[in-house]
Length: 258
Image 1 (spheres, rainbow, N blue to C red):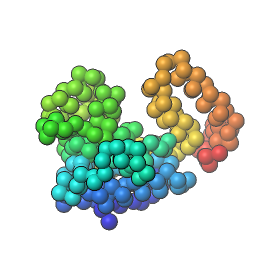
Image 2: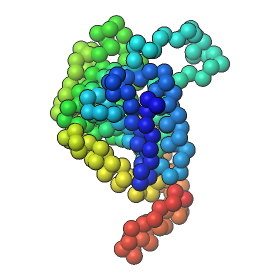
Image 3: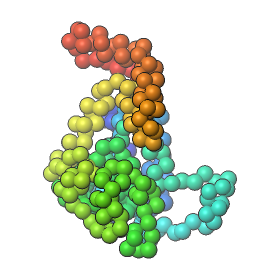
């Protein structure tokens, strides 16, 4: 298996497991990654997901160019044909939060995977780059769109147009990542955050994520209206009542996603 999947404390841990190839993505890993997203999305015991890579040298360096051949289908067939297109990020649009624990290189498609996650934690030896322009291409899995939505446009342009690498501290400075920790502390830090998320009311967590995601493309007035609608939907849920009762009784709430 080129990917490991396990669930602990309500957290699904997806580990890209090709360290000998810098965790680059071959066709087998792409399929396994898609399956892992589907499994975590449909498992009620999973409330949060962590994506990471095996080893400390690389999180993911994108597609394995030695094993990934151009598609046989034409662009028209891929877009309008009967076959379901399988994009690198397919399955990541779930409402459950996804954390990325970046250990080492996050290059090309690997960085685009990280950009598609909700929270990014980096080890001190992490490096990030979208170097496609140096190879006569562009980032094709959301890089040109997700990066400017996460960092200042000037910082995004600097990375996209030069193809230069940045280290973990620079990634922290431009708000690409939320934390930088020692490599030995990376997974502990990610699991601590993931467990805190998993302990919260799952419907509320998913609603908050969806509101942030969908609200980015809406005018403020419409986004606020959407928030008000979601608030009303959650008002009478069992979990919201449980949260208030637990607060009054000074105990930890037990949330069931209802």
